Length: 410
Image 1: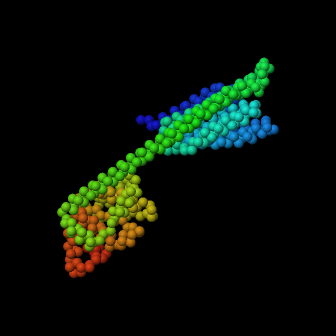
Image 2: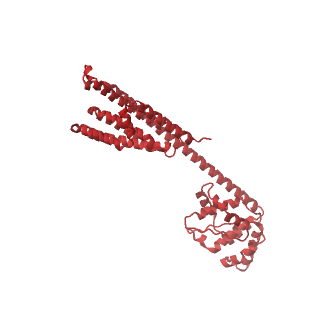
Image 3: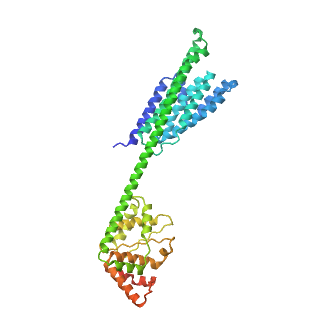
């Protein structure tokens, strides 16, 4: 299967090449050499410098130089946007610089119209500068690529029509002996209809830019819609997992007296680790962390008894998020029926989650809720202690010393 990118780039480059080729065929031999020799924008300014020397007393080139700045900036802006789609802005922009240099070179023979051409290029530059948002996020949008090439074509149409005006004027200048009207009058007659054509070209170029803006807006809306769909799918996935967990808890609690649970919970006084777990789960992108879950160290830890899996890293490296991945994996893929799952998140923001005895109480509470044998052992242990001391509160050493008795053979 061919991707959109595979089809868009060659087609775009081919179409641009056709536009350049058609323009190149119309050039005279000396113009072709000038066209091929132009590869950077600075050479456009060199052409203006030549005009300045030719028309030093009229200050024509100084005005033209100022007028060309918006055009050069606009083409540069357009080139960046085009590069996102074609990956070849320099290859596509070099012919543009060549075409503009050709018409400026021809215009140097007509001082009055040299400034007019520069002013027209200035107007084109203003239009190109309206392309404020480059289509960086949508490099495979065919409609956007087509609109970008339309802009390219309009600029070359301007170059072709401008060249024809000055080529015709130069030809008639050579033949002026046979023509009863003056050269200036003749040039004005040629220029007038072109000025009308340029107005139409401006409108067409503005329409192309509006199309680009519209395509970018549509692409942004489509991306936002897809993001909402992804968020909704993630919400449903989390909701399904939560419902599944709740259903499992409900089955376990069927054989345990509710009042007994409350009593044991009061004795153990566990902390709420689900808050930390859900927060870490939300930070984790769907599908990430698989490298850890599929690692040899993790798989060996699952298959063997009485082993620790120690992960050491600097703060903020992602240990908490990685643990949430492991917890979710174990919830859905319990390796053996006789294996219980309990977890705890130490939290520097909460003092209760830094106390060693609270860690053991919370783990025992989780295991007791899922295993009737463990629950009854905890219940008996606390009942015996409270008979002797109603205000009894378990300490870390006592819990640690009895931990194995609570969970063994359960």
